[in-house]
Amino acid sequence: MSLVLVANRAPIRPTSTGWAPALGGLASALLPVLEAQGGAWVAMQEPDERTPLFQRYPDDDPRFTVRRVPLEEPEYAAFYQGMANRVLWPLAHYLVEHVEPERTFRDAYRAVNRRFAHAALDVAREQGGAVQFWIQDYHMMLVPEMIRGALAGAQVGFFWHVPWPASEVFRIVPSATALLKGLLGSDLIGFHTEGYAENFRESARDLLGAEIDPEGVHWQGRHVRVEAHPIGIDVERFVGFGERPETQAQAEALVEELGDVQIVLGVDRLDYTKGLLLRMEAFERFLELYPEMHGRVTLLQVATPSRTGVPAYDRLRRDMDEITGRINGRFAQGAWAPVRYRYRSFTQEELAVLYRAADVAFVTPLRDGMNLVAHEFAAVSERGALVLSELTGAADYLDGAVFVNPYDAEGMARSLREALDLPEDDRRRRLASLRAAVERLDVHVWADRFLTSLDGRPAPPADGEGG
Ligand code: ADP
Ligand code: G6P
Image (tube, rainbow, N blue to C red):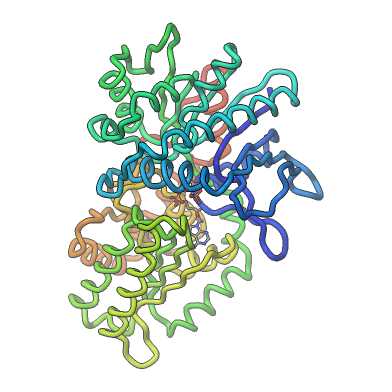
């Protein structure tokens, strides 16, 4: 059966020398899946983007096709920057103060979803034969219902890549019922954790009056299955980066360049859900509490530009510059800078060097789904410790981490010290447990399990679940 995947963000981005994996958890997880399984990926083309509307990738040995749906500036602003990123994104992450009125975004969201549904149906027709539609994430909530409306017998799966909030929070958005009905056009809806799946079933019960059971939602004479399918990374790829001799050599060079300090690493899209400002405050508190660590530890924070033009993201960019300046102004001595902050994107090979060089990965989102940075670190690191926010879906699975509350700067400062001081055997034991969990959650296993379940055949058990 062939696969037609629909996701707003294309899996590859143009660079000065060719193509690179796109940034963000969804694209980096699903690119290797399409490379392995083949099929088509329907994605947006931003207004100023110069990419082909139809592309086979990779050029030299095509594995799958990319279809782009070109967006005009006003629909990009209302659909992507507006409904997706100023309403649904903060809503899913419980950051209700960032949720904006959606009335002016609603029509564009529906219209763009319709264009994606049509594009997916066109691609399916061209491919011929049996097709599985696999729709991704909060940009595309109405697409399942639209595909089902046009093709009653279609097999439609949906994966939600971010947390699903409690129904009391989801109902804040005035279009809540329309959005739920859109999703319920699917045969199978997947979430990272059983908790998110349960929140979704309860939303359908509370807001639509639908009958639910532990496996799903009864809707319009169909039973829509709602399941936990924890996603992971392409483990072999990242383990491979870690094992390259040049990764090790560059990691050593980096430690030396920073003055033989211990490295605390942050790697994120510049996004307010990632808890960056509170993380910086926690590090400032760490420096206040432990003067003996001055000159011995550096926070290396890399943040890739994301969703520029959305006001909250532009503000965060300014705030990060300011807080970095404040901390370095207070504590820097000689050649030692307590914070090294880089606002740019890195290749996966470069990230592997950072993961290898780090003593601690400091992953402290206010809310997050799987957080693939934590997985990538565990796959590459040889000796590091992971400090992880307990408010992530990943926390359900990665029990080798040191857990923190990302709203508690003082607690994070103390846990950071604990992580830096972990005895060697404890650190190794934790890393081995993390590595084992990350291997169980491998993205190829995740995709096979989801698509098998969608196909109606018995799916193997969710191995990684519960750690
Ligand atoms: P999200 O899905 O919110 O983007 P994840 O942690 O799940 O967060 O996934 C982020 C992905 O983007 C990872 O694959 C990571 O390697 C990549 N990424 C994040 N920050 C950077 C950066 N500064 N440079 C390059 N890639 C990055
Ligand atoms: C998260 C979302 C994805 C999104 C990615 C990057 O991973 O779940 O759907 O693609 O962030 O964000 P962007 O807005 O650049 O696509």
